[in-house]
Image (cartoon, rainbow over all chains, first blue to last red):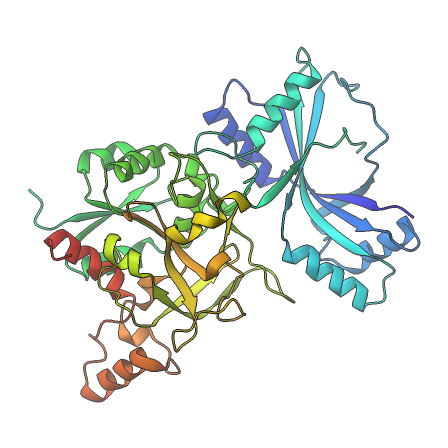
Length: 174
Length: 275
């Protein structure tokens, strides 16, 4: 068995992504990405029946996906090679996860109590940075790290490394 | 010429405690004025003597509570004024902004050395509101202009937050105690990390953290919501419960000051040179 991950996004433009983008434009104009997307990222650990178990959970619990305002899809974190995508953009993904997280712990407890065959749940936020062509993947990754890790008052925004873990996984197939 | 010290209360989009905070300042014998986040020129020209970042949900807590407000231009001014020694208080969301600005604990200038992370309570997550008890540390009473009058007693105050757990990276655990200003305790003054005494899982039971000089204080509880005695619920035990009962029986209840007033009165004392 392996973990199954899904991403959840708003049907409308994501206000947090819009605010992040406008803040980047204001304080880091030279490093600002051309596009920024935000998703809730849920990793379901060892679901008994794989995607079937996960789709059952998603359809049952509207706190995870509210179908009135959100859409969701599976993601395969290992299937896409790095490099410019078909649209000519370089996409870099970054996953921000609280080091200690009541939400993940409580969802794990809820799902176990409801007899779901699952080891655990890990909730994160996935940010997708899009850069127009002309930038190397390495440069794009360095920019993303700079923009993400909030280490000084005037440095970074999306994650506070004191309490949050920052992962740059391989580009995701979304 | 100013007749009384001017305390600037800074309103960000989403702040929601600015008026009662300004009122608490005025009721303590100081002047207060609310400045919007984009009025940094006006703020600079008015040369305030102290600053308060009130509670609320600046920028709707988007990305992370306090993270966006910390990058606003007005915070450049607050940062430099704090570096010059002016008193700065952040309450709840204001505390989150100070943390995200690297103003507390401030061991390295501008570096973000702590976090106000999501509450970590077994069996529940998210927003939490209620009354807690806290005590001021001995060092904070001596050096923090907001805490001079708080004494050694137990102080009941309300909290209302989803992200109020002070966290330090492991390499800073050894010096976190030096930044402790306020600690959660039970009604008798005994510290504990158990819920609900420590309501959010905060490291070292921290309810408030100050910078090295003590002039910047970031606290999660809301003193402005307990400024008057009538704001205390009837079940509050101990010294403040007794005071509440006494004010009720003596007919002075409406005008009697509550535990939250001590934070603002301390600042007024500080400006009078009495602390």
